[in-house]
Image 1 (tube, helix red, strand yellow):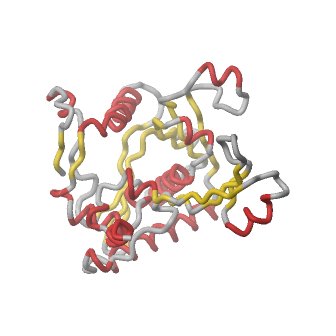
Image 2 (cartoon, rainbow, N blue to C red; image 1 turned 45 degrees about the horizontal axis):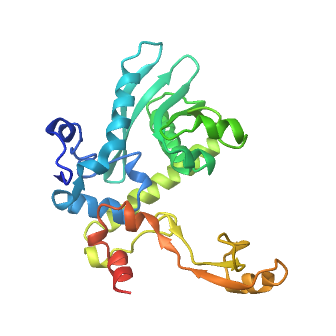
Length: 284
């Protein structure tokens, strides 16, 4: 991976960015498995060509600093313990932030934007926690509950005072119980993801199937019911038919088409330049 410094930031800032590979070949961490097989394979193949600007790494640096602070605190739990399990011809790994052996509670420290809490976008945290619990179970350790303790980096105390639906504290705890059904489902997810990766190890870049709409953070096309002189929509519909049916009922005057977007592809993917789906999207 190549680190760019478009803002000519001090070398100390650049040195704080971790450019080490997250996974060795054939070894996949819990967080890596949350990505699509295409993303994982392209990252592995083009690691030395991927370019990242140091200015875009500020939140990763902050997250690393937060982990480092909590790791140094003394309590009755063990910290930063690594677990690994062989799956197929690969190895699945996970590094647990904190595990309370007495109460069998696994804790992970996160930094996040406030929107993640507002929209309850916790699917990735749930899967990560369950993968950790599954890995630990293979080593004879039981996990009753997972806790994700999030520090909200853009929390607004003034908004919290006037809006009861807004997160009331800059710290948010997302937690869930670990069940046998949940462990069975995550085992299926792990094995299917590893099988997908291994099945496409020799598939050329141009023939990889790409990511699912969810993996692309896809926002589909919408049709907004509008009224002259009003900036915001009366209602945003997922189909033109729905918008037409509600136009008069809502007092709208016209329908505005809003093109969807693959948010991750356009703004957050490091390997999009090698992705066949992205290349086709750009051409279109």
